[in-house]
Amino acid sequence: MSGDVSRASSEEKLRRLQSITDAALSQLGLEDLLDELLERARDLLRADTAAILLVESDGTELVATAASGLEQEVRQGVRLPVGRGFAGSVAARGEPLMLDHVDHTNVLNPILVNRGIASLLGVPMLDGSQVIGVLHVGTLTPRQFTPDDVELLRLVADRASLATQARLSRLDRAAAVALQRSLLPARPPAVPGLDVAARYVPGTAAGVGGDWYDLFPLPSGHVGVAIGDVAGNGLRAAVVMGRIRSALRAYALETDDPAEVLTRLDRKVQLFEPDAMATVLYAVLDPTLSELTLSSAGHLPPLVAEPDEPTRLVAVPPDLPLGAYRHTVRRNTRATLAPDGCLVLYTDGLIERRTRPLDEGVDLLRASVTCAPADIVCRDAMAALLSDNVDATDDIAVLTVRRTDTAG
Image (cartoon, rainbow, N blue to C red):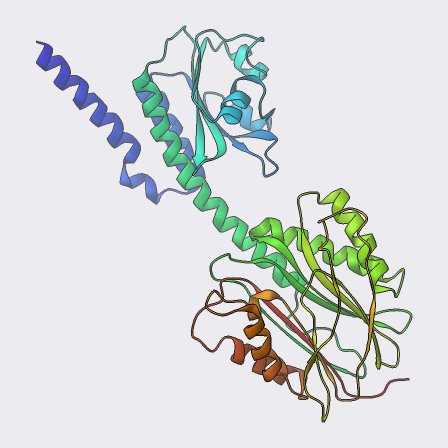
């Protein structure tokens, strides 16, 4: 008799496992997949409700995303703080949690109490060691959940986590690409007296990130030229990049002093993007296009190529990156740009490789830059630095500005 019971128990476990790992679920879209997983979880655990809450990007709140038997959670956009209440405690601890008795003292969501939930079991949804959400089931009658129940709900959570992360990664990349393309046009704006070209290539490993460039005429007759690199990758880095780029333009309208622009930009990042860090080089050409004032927030120095002169690095002292330290003192450096001279700005993805030192990459770039039309300078730089048939793992941005005429 005991053998029959053991065999029946094993068969039930196998049925449960097959229900969760069913390959047919892979054919469903994310919303349908989550709904189906919740229905199966309710059936297998003999529960009355099931719900998934995902952690917001800032990590402080859970948002109701899918539900079965608790659909009003999703319809009402329920948000719960991480670290408080039942679901918030599961998210904060990253461990399963069982409640044999549910009331206002141990849950924050009044919907659970109003629904008459008597017992709850919740498990974290994980991406590696990071908690990305919480899956919980509830019963309308008192229930003591077992270790087998916890194990099964963990399996459901793992399946839901994989699907959610895959979907969010695709959405993040698509949104980041769209944002990057909207902010980084294929060809910078035309400015009389300047020949301008640019290149941007997203890194194959990190995906779209926070590299950017910009060039814009100012009401004073000066021309602003900028390039930067926000730490990180994906949608978050692209969003921060967009904010920094827009803010720099706004501050550039108020002053032609690059160090002052970066000082104001740093204050903005410190206050509104406290977890962000970025390197930026901002240069201002005077109305004659012959005088250049530059300031660097930890960015790589630009190159200048002029007729009958060797290509050189502009000796710009690199102050601290944006977001690194409050009250950083920022400095200006002045340089000249001769007729037909080229100014080349770039991000570290162009010159850095695991297989070669940074200085060697800079030397290769300097050797490739000549007094040629801006588009040819960009083309030659990309060919010289990416000639090893190895895809760049980091974003690459290059901006070339060639003086074609003495203005004013």
